[in-house]
Length: 150
Image 1: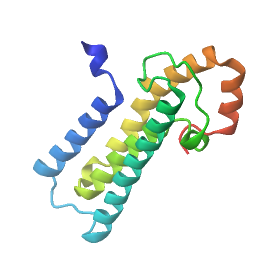
Image 2: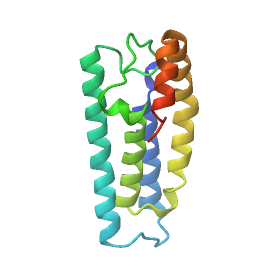
Image 3: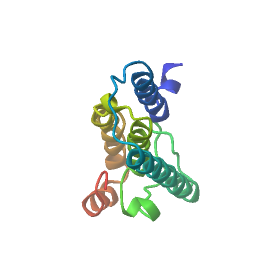
């Protein structure tokens, strides 16, 4: 049961819940400012969903798994994966940052680097290890050409 809960969307929802709870119950009157944070937050959330859609399209096109703990049947290096090796994790981080800005959850800003660190250690590094093992030369070339995040 726990392995089905150990997926990035669950961790993102947990971080979002913490940010919302912080803003709702412990805001201490802090604010990013009226309009700029709302606009920037909305843009970040929108960009995150666009990145997820672009990445999901590539997974579907290449007919390989999008599930983090499963073995990939193909190495995807096209589309959005030319720009980032981890566009969905980048999207999750953008969505978290966007909601923190939009909700004016100032004290939740440290959740962003904590979330990024957790995702990298818990998902990205093991995934890269599997890709390195399964697609040796191709992944080595891809790793040199494309950065992990941006």
